[in-house]
Structures are given as structure tokens and as C-alpha cells.
Length: 264
Image (tube, rainbow, N blue to C red):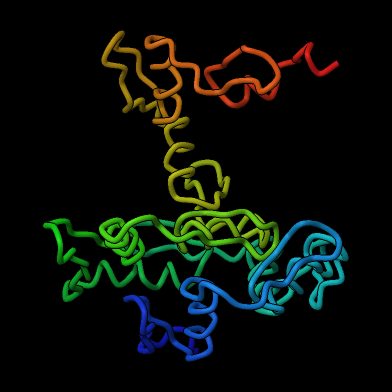
């Protein structure tokens, strides 16, 4: 398929490359255009820079009048490729298993890329920063690092719910929440995840591995986020404060559970 061809069309403003010229134009409008027409949703406060993104938002969030609907469940999509991917993963149980290491993939392009890593002639592509001696294996990480030398990172907006994230890769990962795409499958229990980090954290439930250790009391945790919360009990830091009273909390969850009497 053409989608597997090399990305030869380069953005004139940054190092990102694309397969189609239309993708470059869309990228420039979203990332590099500082002014222009703003499209606003008539049913909520959502705004975006393209009419296409506005249409996607209206259908996905408000009208649910999708062009392509799954016949097996109530899911709907704006693109046929998204519907096909959903049906393969959720209803047909399509799995791609590496014959070399047994790793399981739901996403075929990711599976093909992984299989190439087992080729004895495979040369791993790396990206080296020209301003410091840092080397990255993925372009997205390299690009994010490089932009850090130039100042504040750009903001990427989800055209479905309006959420803002700092990187394009984060936006791609976030959109999987809307499409239902889960490419990372636990080889032990079959549970699937959107992000590899979530799969890694889940796997530790099976292996009982606790790699994150508190330097104060030596207690160990399966996730870095759990360690960070634990450390706050040692430091006394309570970064989440109620806007109506003076109470502060260790986590955002505790803040949300807080029943403030000042509310009336």
C-alpha cells in the first residue's frame, strides 16, 4: 500500500516529513500558521483552524452522525480505514505474532517494523542532535528534544475533544482513546493497551517486579508515578489545592474526592 512508502515530502519550516503534499499543508496550517480563520463549534466552546477538524469534532462529540458505522457494536468513524482497523482488532481478533521472539502486535505497520529489527542486515536508524551529543532512536523524541533548544514547545489540539498536548506523538496516542485502537497486547492475560508504557506497567503485575525504589525508606513500586506520590509523604508536598478553601492534597484524585463545605 502507498502508506508504507517513504516520507519524502519535507516541511519547509521544520524537519518533519510526510508521504503526501496534502499532509504537509495540513501540518503547516496546524503547527506553523500563527493567524488565519478560526472555526468555532456552535454547540460548545471548541475552536480549530480547519473546517475539516470542526466537522470531525461536531460528528464525534455532538451529532454522532458517522459516515462509517460498525455493524457489531455502536462505534462510528469518519474514515473507512479507522472502521476497518476497529473491526479487525475488536471483532475479528486479528493478531500479528513475531516468529522470532513471540511478541504480539495488533497494528500491522508496527509489526512489520518490529520484524525488520530481527534481520541480521538491519541497521537501526538513529537521530543525533546537532546542538548537543544526545542520540534518539525515534524521530518524535528527537524532534521534541530539538525544539527544546528553540524555546517553548508547540501545542497540538485534538480535533475531537479539544484537548491540548505538547507533541504530535502525544496527540496520536491521545486520539487512540477516540478510535479505540489498542496496539499493545499483554502476552500473559491478553489485556490490550493504548501505550507501551501502560503495557510495561501492567506486565509488572504478573512479574511482581518493582523497579522504582524510594531513596528515603527503600519502599519499592511498580510505577514511577506511584513512587512520585509516595515521596510527597516524605517531603510534605501537596501540589493540589482546593480553590474554595485552604486544603491541599497529595494527588489530583484526592482533590476531586474532596467535599468542600465552602461550595454551599
